[in-house]
Image: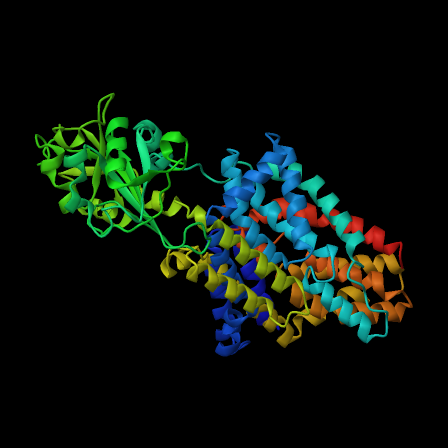
Length: 610
């Protein structure tokens, strides 16, 4: 027991100090428990097979799918539309939305689903995401108090009371308590988050370069760009653009071919081609530039239908597989003096040259005949993987401006947003209703796999990149600490000592002691384990004092759920840690006052019910 308490104390000190990474502290803590003989290696590794940890992995992937399809941005834009420009109104609306969702979905699932939405929403409003992410985690926990299924401690307390002969708690028995927590929590978090969290996240670095939309506007790419769809009777079907020599014969430049396997369906596969070496098919859409007369002549002769949603008419210009980047030509480059056609960008690098910026002038017409000068900035377009190869040069020929691969990661498959929304809703339904015989962790992993197979995420590699491994390691490595405390009897000794010290001094004092003991335990072990350990102790103490056990055990579930002062007490706290750029001390600054305030209100309120 002594070794466990020493390791726990040292871990707590290191967490609070922030001198070492939190995940490293957690791993060292688990290793120390093994080396001291408190746990076996198998017991120390059980945290990584815990359903909660596996669920966290799946939820990161689901959140990545929500973000990469642009669904997060759409929802965030909707919330922004309701809140307007008022930051406080936005904060309150976010807290209420998260709390309501958290009433029917696990707080972990709620926060993981809302996290990409909140990040997108904050960026859209020009605000720091860190102002909202920690309150988001706390709102998920508060919302869990609204219903019986909102958080595991509620179910644990229900079972403890039912086994003792009390009438089972109903689905909304916790609702009044949850409402009080949300009101008090929101009122306190508005000033606390403004004081301690605002501006925590650094703004995006200027090295990231211009966004794709900025490039479109700067080079006026949408002007004169037309969408032409190949009809079934077109002579272009089965031929490549290179074979047809469209530029020479019609004076039209086709910069992109877009192909959709299922027109209009959310499950459709959409492909983009930037170079004309692919045989054309009926239904393919050509993005072409040229004069109105040239476009009209080309469309009539080849039996093409001009689409109404072309970029020239305000329609979307999207970037999925195809993107753009600027390159700066160096003085010693072999490109200097050559025409664009002579450089071989299309044949050698499989890239189109869309424009040249020379000082303050933009050269956009007859690009193939333009000669390149030193210090010209060339706008190239093509598949992202081909653009990435431009960085492999030695820097003597050109320098890629900005970070095009970061821009590729930001490009959203917005046509996949409906299927991402469907996957999210189905996952929520499977997790919310007990009569569906599917475990929550299974529902989450099914949703994660579905995000990959339906193309909401570009690849399995992209799915792996969405996982915040620091949070996974932190939580998985800290879970064995609860096993060590229970195995050595340390948790039971601490809890019983606190409870028995005030025996016979009234119901309110007993509830206060129970609440404090539970809150203290949540600093070091998960809230679910804390509720399991404290529920029988609280029940025995209430019965020994001849008090109504319901409010006493309610104190256990509230204290176990309202654990805000530690990043590893609950998965939601850990989920937002890296995304918000938080240190463990930030949870103490914001979470501890909130935890104390809610505790005072709950002790007084529940004490009156005894």
